[in-house]
Image (cartoon, rainbow, N blue to C red; front, side, top):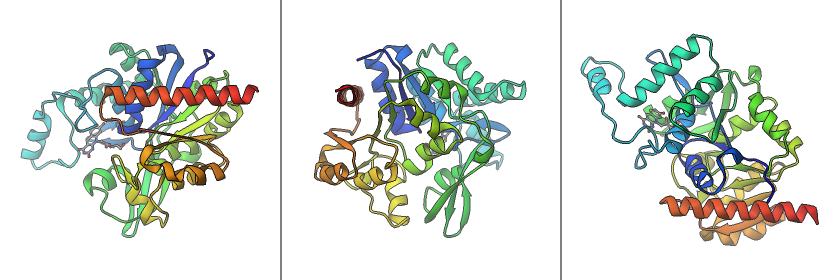
Length: 320
Ligand code: FO1
């Protein structure tokens, strides 16, 4: 394989798991992660960036692996004190996590961009994989529901994904600009672009819909591979399957492939969904059927290797 970059588009938990696997099998300078910032919001006057932070904590080996978000071995004095004062306690900020939000908010107020803050956090915590937020402008994912529009974290955390979703919008996206660092990387002949197994509607779509991003991906000429977050009709974590049925589409890996049609060259789906491979091939996509559920580091590395084998196959098929 050549030494071009592998550029992974990632939301939170599922995406971060595959990114960790990729980081174990690729030299650090060959991996770039573009993170979803549609989940970002202001809370207690602080800028919170959940998906970017999940990737940071995962790569810095600081993540709470059981919860999938936040830091391991957290203390919760801030939250307990906030609750005892009758403050808002629906969104859990651990004490160590809080320090990151305070530092970031201060740096942003001082004129740094989100990309710059993310790079300096990565440097401080010795993460050498490049983590690039999808844009430096504020974009806010809105979940439209039967009972009205909800800011993403209100839908996801406060209301526990209970409202019935009718669609999604991304406030501010028209004024956003695809991160120039990512656009530059897409223009330098990357080996592949990976849509990680994150939620297609609220994690990957905001990245793809950021003006300039999809055009840059398409112009890169690199194969685009998506790993299905839907396995056996259910999402490994999060509301993707629930959203799909509420939107009136079957919660299947085939439907994920349909959603990405026109952009994605190949799908990686789980063994339990092997019967869907012919239908996905009929959409004009290549398919790999492998174990995709990442329970431990070995699973993450194995999936990363399977994805990279597919990259190699797609690149040599293009050459011949
Ligand atoms: N998810 C929850 O389900 N409950 C929480 O209280 C919560 C707090 C939280 C704090 C910081 C952070 O970076 C993430 C946090 N998350 C929490 C996860 C997060 O909001 C979602 O996982 C993502 O936005 C979806 O990818």
